[in-house]
Length: 206
Image 1 (tube, rainbow, N blue to C red):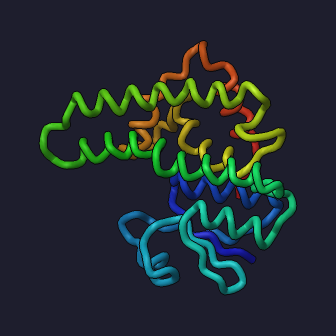
Image 2: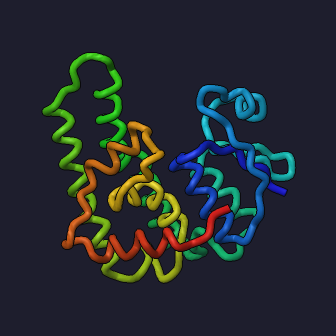
């Protein structure tokens, strides 16, 4: 059985939890506390989650775990078999991880630096986050999922972050998640995105 190292409310862990359930795979969970990362460091040499151990193979980083799962357990797929569609999904994942996430990360860094936050810089990044909601709304104009007729790695990679546009669990007080909630104003002009959040949230997780 796959072993999954996870932490409560982790967005990147939720990516993997959705993907595992999508493929009908079970996993033994090892829950770590952010104050003690020794268990995940011991198995992977680094302290971030998620990490999986699959038949002795250790895989770190949520995106790489999605790729690993699709190689080893191809049905149902997370990535399309058609090379052009696969390239589109690869581009989306790189954009989401490197460009989209840059804005909330920049806001968090500004707040955590200890000095007075740069309010003008934060506002620029906040506007960027709000504008991206329009982009996702347009992506969903073609169907129920971000890049096709069925859920894919694109949906599972984006949902754990975009879901905060709908609100936040009161017990989840992580700064990054508060930033996601505050700066993604999901209004009446994003009906497709709101429906997509509900649709993905209804899917199972391990």
